[in-house]
Length: 108
Image 1 (cartoon, helix red, strand yellow):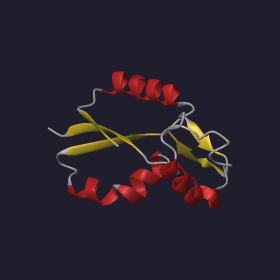
Image 2: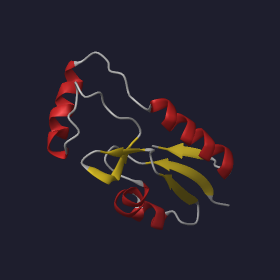
Image 3: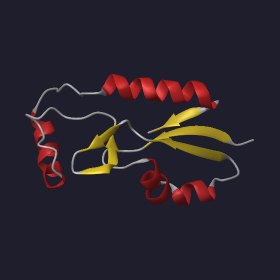
């Protein structure tokens, strides 16, 4: 019996990109024991609406442009904390999917 796992993609991806480019090979190799079901994050990214994030960053940290993501990462290393905008919405989406799916675990 295969484990049914809810998979959460990374920032700047979506469920399709994650399944096709990040975990395709491992899901093929483990197909008899693992079923991954990826969930799209609810927040689209300003520079490409097909890509998503589990939260967004305040404008004082990031201007929303794809070419400034590295600068965002460097800025995040300097600040002690930040308010992840939209995190509650993402958390609720994950909980809703979890309650529907009969999952054995979460990856991500």
